[in-house]
Length: 347
Ligand code: OTD
Ligand code: ZN
Ligand code: ZN
Image 1 (cartoon, rainbow, N blue to C red):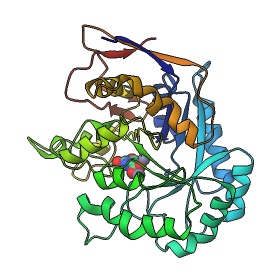
Image 2: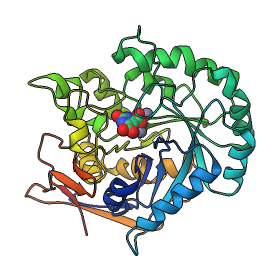
Image 3: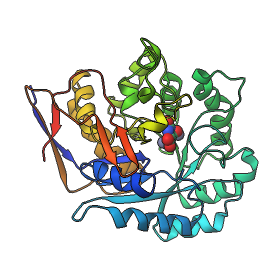
Image 4: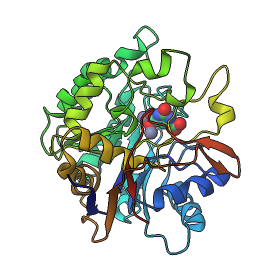
Protein backbone atom coordinates (compact mmCIF):
# COMPACT_ATOMS: atom_id res chain seq x y z
CA UNK A 1 0.00 0.00 0.00
CA UNK A 2 1.33 3.43 -0.95
CA UNK A 3 1.22 5.77 1.99
CA UNK A 4 3.70 8.38 0.84
CA UNK A 5 3.17 10.12 -2.45
CA UNK A 6 5.46 12.77 -3.92
CA UNK A 7 4.26 14.70 -6.95
CA UNK A 8 5.40 17.84 -8.77
CA UNK A 9 4.01 20.95 -7.08
CA UNK A 10 0.41 21.19 -8.31
CA UNK A 11 -1.38 23.89 -10.29
CA UNK A 12 -4.98 24.98 -9.76
CA UNK A 13 -6.26 25.86 -13.20
CA UNK A 14 -9.47 27.55 -11.95
CA UNK A 15 -9.43 29.57 -8.74
CA UNK A 16 -11.39 32.44 -7.20
CA UNK A 17 -9.27 34.59 -4.91
CA UNK A 18 -11.61 37.62 -4.57
CA UNK A 19 -10.19 40.90 -3.33
CA UNK A 20 -9.52 42.85 -0.14
CA UNK A 21 -9.84 41.02 3.18
CA UNK A 22 -11.11 37.76 1.67
CA UNK A 23 -8.17 37.69 -0.79
CA UNK A 24 -5.72 38.17 2.07
CA UNK A 25 -7.45 35.42 4.05
CA UNK A 26 -7.73 32.76 1.34
CA UNK A 27 -4.51 33.28 -0.65
CA UNK A 28 -2.23 31.49 1.87
CA UNK A 29 -4.49 28.42 1.67
CA UNK A 30 -3.76 28.01 -2.04
CA UNK A 31 -0.15 29.23 -1.96
CA UNK A 32 0.72 26.60 0.66
CA UNK A 33 0.24 23.71 -1.77
CA UNK A 34 -0.02 25.14 -5.29
CA UNK A 35 2.71 26.69 -7.41
CA UNK A 36 0.40 28.45 -9.86
CA UNK A 37 -3.28 29.12 -10.35
CA UNK A 38 -5.45 30.49 -13.12
CA UNK A 39 -7.13 33.42 -11.38
CA UNK A 40 -10.78 34.01 -12.19
CA UNK A 41 -11.70 37.59 -13.13
CA UNK A 42 -15.28 37.75 -11.77
CA UNK A 43 -14.70 40.51 -9.26
CA UNK A 44 -17.08 43.42 -8.77
CA UNK A 45 -16.35 45.17 -11.08
CA UNK A 46 -14.79 42.43 -13.22
CA UNK A 47 -11.21 42.29 -14.52
CA UNK A 48 -11.85 43.35 -18.10
CA UNK A 49 -8.75 45.14 -19.37
CA UNK A 50 -5.01 44.63 -19.30
CA UNK A 51 -4.78 47.49 -16.80
CA UNK A 52 -7.36 45.80 -14.55
CA UNK A 53 -5.35 42.55 -14.62
CA UNK A 54 -2.10 44.34 -13.85
CA UNK A 55 -3.65 46.09 -10.87
CA UNK A 56 -5.31 42.90 -9.58
CA UNK A 57 -2.07 40.96 -9.93
CA UNK A 58 -0.32 43.63 -7.86
CA UNK A 59 -3.01 43.36 -5.15
CA UNK A 60 -2.50 39.59 -5.05
CA UNK A 61 1.29 39.89 -4.84
CA UNK A 62 0.98 42.49 -2.09
CA UNK A 63 -0.72 40.00 0.26
CA UNK A 64 1.19 36.87 -0.76
CA UNK A 65 2.93 35.47 2.31
CA UNK A 66 6.69 36.14 2.28
CA UNK A 67 8.67 33.28 0.80
CA UNK A 68 5.61 31.66 -0.80
CA UNK A 69 6.28 29.90 -4.09
CA UNK A 70 3.13 30.93 -5.93
CA UNK A 71 2.50 32.61 -9.28
CA UNK A 72 -0.96 33.94 -10.16
CA UNK A 73 -1.84 33.37 -13.81
CA UNK A 74 -4.16 36.20 -14.72
CA UNK A 75 -7.23 36.13 -16.96
CA UNK A 76 -9.58 38.67 -18.48
CA UNK A 77 -13.36 38.65 -18.29
CA UNK A 78 -14.79 38.72 -21.80
CA UNK A 79 -17.47 41.32 -22.43
CA UNK A 80 -19.19 42.46 -25.59
CA UNK A 81 -16.99 45.55 -25.37
CA UNK A 82 -13.65 43.73 -25.03
CA UNK A 83 -10.97 45.12 -27.34
CA UNK A 84 -9.05 42.41 -29.23
CA UNK A 85 -5.94 44.62 -29.29
CA UNK A 86 -5.92 44.98 -25.50
CA UNK A 87 -6.28 41.20 -25.10
CA UNK A 88 -3.41 40.56 -27.49
CA UNK A 89 -1.23 43.13 -25.71
CA UNK A 90 -1.93 41.56 -22.29
CA UNK A 91 -1.06 38.15 -23.71
CA UNK A 92 2.04 39.46 -25.47
CA UNK A 93 3.25 40.99 -22.21
CA UNK A 94 2.97 37.57 -20.56
CA UNK A 95 0.37 38.95 -18.15
CA UNK A 96 -2.68 36.87 -19.06
CA UNK A 97 -2.93 33.17 -19.80
CA UNK A 98 -6.59 32.92 -20.77
CA UNK A 99 -9.80 34.86 -21.34
CA UNK A 100 -12.92 33.82 -19.46
CA UNK A 101 -16.31 33.58 -21.08
CA UNK A 102 -19.34 33.80 -18.84
CA UNK A 103 -22.72 33.66 -20.54
CA UNK A 104 -24.47 36.64 -18.94
CA UNK A 105 -26.22 35.57 -15.74
CA UNK A 106 -24.80 32.03 -15.58
CA UNK A 107 -22.98 32.28 -12.27
CA UNK A 108 -21.73 34.63 -9.56
CA UNK A 109 -20.97 38.11 -10.93
CA UNK A 110 -21.57 37.09 -14.52
CA UNK A 111 -24.11 39.78 -15.42
CA UNK A 112 -21.46 41.61 -17.45
CA UNK A 113 -20.84 38.49 -19.53
CA UNK A 114 -21.74 37.69 -23.11
CA UNK A 115 -25.30 37.75 -24.46
CA UNK A 116 -24.68 37.91 -28.19
CA UNK A 117 -21.80 35.68 -29.21
CA UNK A 118 -21.43 37.30 -32.62
CA UNK A 119 -20.25 40.46 -30.86
CA UNK A 120 -17.19 38.75 -29.38
CA UNK A 121 -16.16 36.91 -32.55
CA UNK A 122 -13.39 39.40 -33.45
CA UNK A 123 -11.79 38.83 -30.02
CA UNK A 124 -12.15 35.05 -30.34
CA UNK A 125 -10.61 35.15 -33.81
CA UNK A 126 -7.65 37.09 -32.46
CA UNK A 127 -7.29 34.59 -29.61
CA UNK A 128 -7.33 31.68 -32.06
CA UNK A 129 -4.62 33.43 -34.06
CA UNK A 130 -2.33 33.98 -31.06
CA UNK A 131 -3.10 30.66 -29.31
CA UNK A 132 -4.68 32.22 -26.21
CA UNK A 133 -7.12 29.81 -24.52
CA UNK A 134 -10.77 30.64 -23.90
CA UNK A 135 -12.05 29.30 -20.57
CA UNK A 136 -15.79 28.76 -20.78
CA UNK A 137 -18.44 28.59 -18.09
CA UNK A 138 -20.59 26.21 -20.10
CA UNK A 139 -24.19 26.68 -19.06
CA UNK A 140 -27.10 28.25 -20.90
CA UNK A 141 -29.03 30.79 -18.87
CA UNK A 142 -32.41 30.38 -20.54
CA UNK A 143 -34.95 30.18 -17.69
CA UNK A 144 -36.87 27.59 -19.70
CA UNK A 145 -33.96 25.16 -19.47
CA UNK A 146 -33.86 23.11 -16.28
CA UNK A 147 -30.85 24.00 -14.17
CA UNK A 148 -29.66 20.37 -14.20
CA UNK A 149 -29.68 20.37 -18.04
CA UNK A 150 -27.96 23.68 -18.62
CA UNK A 151 -24.50 22.24 -19.24
CA UNK A 152 -25.64 19.62 -21.72
CA UNK A 153 -27.77 22.14 -23.62
CA UNK A 154 -24.86 24.61 -23.72
CA UNK A 155 -22.62 22.00 -25.32
CA UNK A 156 -25.11 21.33 -28.10
CA UNK A 157 -26.37 24.83 -28.75
CA UNK A 158 -23.37 27.08 -28.03
CA UNK A 159 -20.09 25.27 -27.57
CA UNK A 160 -20.20 22.89 -30.49
CA UNK A 161 -21.33 25.55 -33.00
CA UNK A 162 -18.62 27.90 -31.68
CA UNK A 163 -15.93 25.26 -32.10
CA UNK A 164 -17.19 24.39 -35.59
CA UNK A 165 -16.90 28.04 -36.50
CA UNK A 166 -13.45 28.52 -34.95
CA UNK A 167 -11.78 25.10 -34.82
CA UNK A 168 -8.37 26.57 -34.09
CA UNK A 169 -9.56 28.32 -30.89
CA UNK A 170 -8.10 26.66 -27.80
CA UNK A 171 -10.95 25.99 -25.35
CA UNK A 172 -11.14 24.87 -21.74
CA UNK A 173 -14.54 23.59 -20.65
CA UNK A 174 -14.45 24.80 -17.06
CA UNK A 175 -15.72 22.69 -14.16
CA UNK A 176 -17.54 20.03 -16.15
CA UNK A 177 -20.26 18.32 -14.12
CA UNK A 178 -21.90 15.85 -16.50
CA UNK A 179 -21.19 12.73 -18.52
CA UNK A 180 -22.12 14.83 -21.57
CA UNK A 181 -19.28 17.20 -20.65
CA UNK A 182 -16.86 14.30 -20.31
CA UNK A 183 -17.96 12.81 -23.63
CA UNK A 184 -17.77 16.12 -25.46
CA UNK A 185 -14.31 16.89 -24.10
CA UNK A 186 -13.21 13.58 -25.60
CA UNK A 187 -14.35 14.57 -29.09
CA UNK A 188 -11.78 17.35 -29.32
CA UNK A 189 -8.09 17.18 -30.14
CA UNK A 190 -5.28 19.16 -28.55
CA UNK A 191 -7.35 22.36 -28.69
CA UNK A 192 -9.95 21.16 -26.21
CA UNK A 193 -9.55 20.40 -22.51
CA UNK A 194 -11.76 20.33 -19.42
CA UNK A 195 -11.19 21.17 -15.79
CA UNK A 196 -12.79 19.14 -13.03
CA UNK A 197 -13.30 20.42 -9.49
CA UNK A 198 -12.55 18.60 -6.28
CA UNK A 199 -16.08 18.91 -4.96
CA UNK A 200 -17.78 17.54 -8.08
CA UNK A 201 -15.75 14.35 -7.61
CA UNK A 202 -17.19 14.06 -4.09
CA UNK A 203 -20.77 15.30 -3.98
CA UNK A 204 -23.87 14.65 -6.00
CA UNK A 205 -27.13 16.58 -5.77
CA UNK A 206 -28.35 14.51 -2.83
CA UNK A 207 -25.61 16.05 -0.73
CA UNK A 208 -27.18 19.45 -1.30
CA UNK A 209 -30.84 18.57 -0.95
CA UNK A 210 -31.45 15.34 1.00
CA UNK A 211 -31.88 15.53 4.76
CA UNK A 212 -32.00 19.32 4.90
CA UNK A 213 -30.60 21.95 2.57
CA UNK A 214 -26.80 22.29 2.76
CA UNK A 215 -25.75 25.71 1.51
CA UNK A 216 -22.05 24.89 1.67
CA UNK A 217 -22.54 22.22 -1.03
CA UNK A 218 -24.35 24.62 -3.33
CA UNK A 219 -22.23 25.77 -6.24
CA UNK A 220 -22.59 26.39 -9.95
CA UNK A 221 -22.76 24.43 -12.06
CA UNK A 222 -24.88 22.63 -9.49
CA UNK A 223 -23.82 19.06 -8.66
CA UNK A 224 -25.76 16.52 -10.73
CA UNK A 225 -26.99 12.96 -10.12
CA UNK A 226 -24.63 10.17 -9.06
CA UNK A 227 -24.04 8.76 -12.55
CA UNK A 228 -22.47 12.08 -13.55
CA UNK A 229 -20.22 12.14 -10.50
CA UNK A 230 -19.02 8.67 -11.44
CA UNK A 231 -18.33 9.81 -15.01
CA UNK A 232 -16.24 12.71 -13.64
CA UNK A 233 -14.28 10.35 -11.40
CA UNK A 234 -13.58 8.08 -14.34
CA UNK A 235 -12.42 11.03 -16.45
CA UNK A 236 -10.24 12.62 -13.77
CA UNK A 237 -8.49 9.34 -13.02
CA UNK A 238 -8.26 8.19 -16.65
CA UNK A 239 -4.78 9.58 -17.18
CA UNK A 240 -6.03 11.51 -20.24
CA UNK A 241 -4.22 14.84 -20.48
CA UNK A 242 -7.40 16.64 -21.58
CA UNK A 243 -8.75 16.45 -18.00
CA UNK A 244 -7.00 18.44 -15.29
CA UNK A 245 -7.65 20.08 -11.95
CA UNK A 246 -9.40 23.40 -11.59
CA UNK A 247 -10.71 23.50 -8.06
CA UNK A 248 -13.15 26.37 -8.61
CA UNK A 249 -12.56 27.09 -4.94
CA UNK A 250 -14.99 29.99 -4.50
CA UNK A 251 -15.04 31.53 -1.04
CA UNK A 252 -18.06 33.36 0.30
CA UNK A 253 -18.33 34.34 3.93
CA UNK A 254 -20.84 32.27 5.89
CA UNK A 255 -23.30 35.13 6.23
CA UNK A 256 -23.69 35.19 2.45
CA UNK A 257 -24.01 31.40 2.09
CA UNK A 258 -26.39 30.81 5.00
CA UNK A 259 -29.33 32.99 4.10
CA UNK A 260 -32.61 32.85 2.18
CA UNK A 261 -30.81 33.44 -1.13
CA UNK A 262 -27.37 31.97 -0.55
CA UNK A 263 -24.35 32.48 -2.80
CA UNK A 264 -22.99 29.66 -4.95
CA UNK A 265 -19.50 28.31 -4.33
CA UNK A 266 -17.55 25.68 -2.41
CA UNK A 267 -14.29 26.65 -0.69
CA UNK A 268 -11.83 23.80 -1.17
CA UNK A 269 -8.42 25.49 -1.29
CA UNK A 270 -7.44 24.29 2.18
CA UNK A 271 -8.00 20.55 1.76
CA UNK A 272 -8.14 19.89 -1.99
CA UNK A 273 -4.91 17.89 -2.22
CA UNK A 274 -5.76 15.41 0.59
CA UNK A 275 -9.30 15.05 -0.79
CA UNK A 276 -7.96 14.29 -4.26
CA UNK A 277 -5.48 11.75 -2.89
CA UNK A 278 -8.43 10.07 -1.17
CA UNK A 279 -10.50 10.01 -4.37
CA UNK A 280 -7.64 8.80 -6.57
CA UNK A 281 -6.80 6.06 -4.06
CA UNK A 282 -10.44 4.94 -4.01
CA UNK A 283 -10.29 4.73 -7.80
CA UNK A 284 -7.06 2.73 -7.70
CA UNK A 285 -5.34 5.57 -9.52
CA UNK A 286 -2.93 7.21 -7.08
CA UNK A 287 -0.23 6.96 -9.74
CA UNK A 288 -2.36 9.26 -11.93
CA UNK A 289 -2.82 12.04 -9.41
CA UNK A 290 0.34 13.85 -10.55
CA UNK A 291 -0.92 14.01 -14.13
CA UNK A 292 -4.25 15.49 -13.08
CA UNK A 293 -2.89 18.05 -10.60
CA UNK A 294 0.61 18.85 -11.80
CA UNK A 295 1.29 17.94 -15.44
CA UNK A 296 -1.71 18.12 -17.75
CA UNK A 297 -2.83 21.66 -16.95
CA UNK A 298 0.70 22.97 -17.30
CA UNK A 299 0.97 21.13 -20.61
CA UNK A 300 -2.22 22.69 -21.96
CA UNK A 301 -1.18 26.19 -20.92
CA UNK A 302 2.34 25.74 -22.32
CA UNK A 303 4.02 26.01 -18.91
CA UNK A 304 6.83 23.83 -17.57
CA UNK A 305 5.93 21.22 -14.98
CA UNK A 306 7.10 22.50 -11.61
CA UNK A 307 10.57 21.45 -10.54
CA UNK A 308 9.39 21.59 -6.92
CA UNK A 309 7.48 18.79 -5.25
CA UNK A 310 4.61 18.22 -2.83
CA UNK A 311 4.50 15.16 -0.59
CA UNK A 312 1.34 13.62 0.82
CA UNK A 313 1.32 11.05 3.58
CA UNK A 314 -1.41 8.67 4.66
CA UNK A 315 -1.73 8.11 8.39
CA UNK A 316 -3.84 5.89 10.59
CA UNK A 317 -5.61 8.86 12.17
CA UNK A 318 -7.93 11.03 10.10
CA UNK A 319 -6.68 14.41 8.98
CA UNK A 320 -8.16 17.36 10.84
CA UNK A 321 -8.91 20.75 9.35
CA UNK A 322 -10.57 23.70 10.95
CA UNK A 323 -14.25 23.94 10.12
CA UNK A 324 -13.84 27.54 9.07
CA UNK A 325 -11.17 29.88 7.82
CA UNK A 326 -11.28 33.28 9.47
CA UNK A 327 -10.82 36.13 7.05
CA UNK A 328 -10.88 39.80 7.90
CA UNK A 329 -14.33 39.90 6.27
CA UNK A 330 -15.79 36.99 8.27
CA UNK A 331 -15.56 33.19 8.44
CA UNK A 332 -15.52 31.03 5.31
CA UNK A 333 -16.59 27.40 5.76
CA UNK A 334 -14.05 24.88 4.47
CA UNK A 335 -15.57 22.16 2.27
CA UNK A 336 -16.33 19.06 4.35
CA UNK A 337 -16.34 15.84 2.32
CA UNK A 338 -18.62 14.01 4.76
CA UNK A 339 -16.16 11.14 5.28
CA UNK A 340 -12.83 10.84 7.06
CA UNK A 341 -9.71 11.50 5.01
CA UNK A 342 -6.38 9.98 5.99
CA UNK A 343 -4.12 11.83 3.57
CA UNK A 344 -2.32 15.01 4.59
CA UNK A 345 0.16 17.28 2.89
CA UNK A 346 3.53 17.20 4.62
CA UNK A 347 4.50 20.55 5.99
N1 OTD B 1 -19.26 28.73 -9.30
N2 OTD B 1 -19.32 30.20 -7.52
C1 OTD B 1 -18.51 31.08 -8.17
C2 OTD B 1 -18.03 30.80 -9.38
C3 OTD B 1 -18.17 29.45 -9.86
O1 OTD B 1 -19.00 29.12 -12.02
C4 OTD B 1 -18.01 29.30 -11.31
O2 OTD B 1 -16.88 29.36 -11.78
C5 OTD B 1 -18.17 32.30 -7.47
O3 OTD B 1 -18.63 32.46 -6.34
O4 OTD B 1 -17.40 33.11 -8.03
C6 OTD B 1 -19.72 29.06 -8.11
O5 OTD B 1 -20.54 28.31 -7.55
ZN1 ZN C 1 -18.02 28.93 -13.84
ZN1 ZN D 1 -15.23 29.40 -10.95
